[in-house]
Image 1 (cartoon, one colour):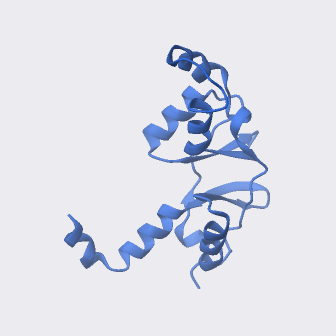
Image 2 (image 1 turned 135 degrees about the vertical axis):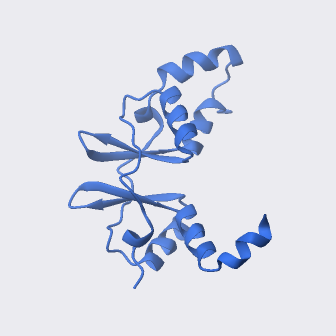
Length: 143
């Protein structure tokens, strides 16, 4: 049976609650990811997504000028806009169950925790890559 362990990204990049939005955005850009676990002393305390960042930067509830973006990037932290205590799964979770959870909750990723320690992250992209690789002959047709 295919499990989360077979598909997940092992030991993903992470940020601390005190990481600024500027640091979060830079890490997301350099690592080409859209979700980052938030850790305190190795313990998962939250997850921050590109959507969380966009909501802070472009909030219709908080009117601000573009000149204030620099201040926001350096003063708002991951803790300010992360999802605390996110839903997690284990490496042994069947892959179909993880896919179902991502679909039901409309999440882009789920942190993978084993004995309280973050060991990976599984994303919608991991599933797409897996299924695309099942039929590599069709990948050449797209290019």
